[in-house]
View (tube, chains in turn cyan, purple):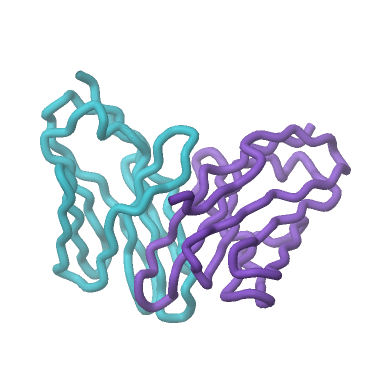
Length: 110
Length: 114
């Protein structure tokens, strides 16, 4: 069974304090790893898709990286508006369904 | 662009009542999904559809039913509501399972069964 584990569960940062979120996965045949951002009371919003080990993608203060066992979401010099829950999901070649981790809730204080 | 629209946003049901959660998308996506999200848990797939007239079960289908008569609409039916169905429900759609597989989510329906 596909497993996706995110750590830490919660992260409190000071504005400008860079940090990383981890998403470790156990799947057979990874098609893609997805990162989503979810604000309170809203649906998840797509950020990145990574397809192969070594791949990196960036968007503003966020950078996602992928290895064969895990993905990291790096937040560089975060701002309060980066406060959200970040969700990781994997998709395998067996089917198209997304298996989600429980998420990391990031709070950035001014 | 409306994207994925869910109604209602909030609902309180009594045990044993039934209701339909509505979902519509205007992006002409073939794939549509229903997830539930419980505190501290990842989103769990309830049902999915790969096109009009085709639906199938996800991880947690018990107590739910779906239909897909058009590309745009994918309603989720709860029969005989139970407290275990208290959750936030999200509808999502995507263009393809191979390319552009990013899913677009609705704003969610918060359901409480009492």
